[in-house]
Image 1: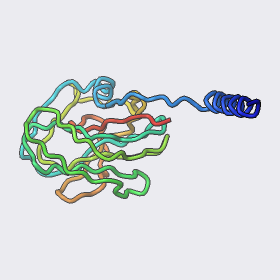
Image 2: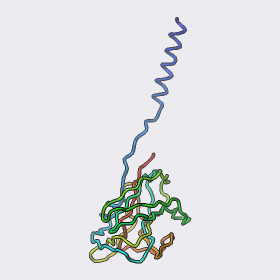
Image 3: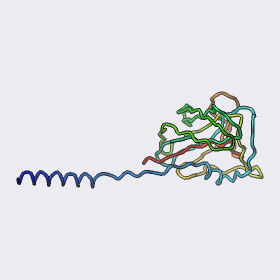
Image 4: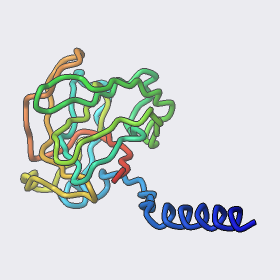
Length: 190
């Protein structure tokens, strides 16, 4: 009987010690940096662009914490059943992920959940879309925004674009406007 009591107490002590040593996991909230980015830039004049020349355009960014992209969000002024969105490694200019988003309604945010894409803290990435339809968002005086811009856990370095319908890394940087609306749902992981 004493052996059973000792064994029970030993297992109980090990269980308490193990529980006390376990680090409690925190579930971090998801965030979308687009509205904070637009507020910080002062880009509050919006012009609709429909059926313009195709371009690849988007934002260079880096997370301030380790995390992941869980979804892509897009809003454009026209319907597009096959809008191509690309996430790039900024340094190597290589494609990390390509997603096709079915935009069924104009002027409405479309959210496409994706399998999580892990992002490293302080590493530079770029998210782009290739489209003929977009919103041109700028200041009333067309002056430049000051970069980088911190929007939650995301630092946005620049907006850039390149003409054409091919999936190509944008090389033309322009601080006087933003073409979109394209963003992502980010979640810190540690």
